[in-house]
Image (cartoon, rainbow, N blue to C red):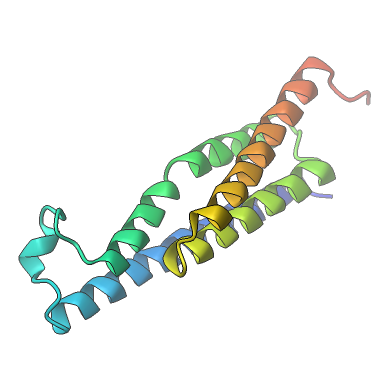
Length: 141
């Protein structure tokens, strides 16, 4: 397997971020055209409609834990540690971020969102453990 395979989950997560940006734009535009909000309401969004607030909060979430994901993926690539296991774990993390986003911007049920987030957090931690093990015990040639 090529080391560059670790970039595909990163690309997928970046695509998700762009999709959420588009959702924020659409929801804010709808809020303005429906009269729920004015353009000025978004200058300092203290009175933002719930639909766009959930999307913007999700977007913020996509710049928190996923930043550690990007760093560990790049580190795994740099030390030639992007194994099949690491790539599978990376894809599972992306799947959890997609599931988290879907729940967050639709039903926003914390009962669903919280365990999805916890699983994603654990998967991210697993990538860091894989990196540490790869550095501590390099594979034999």
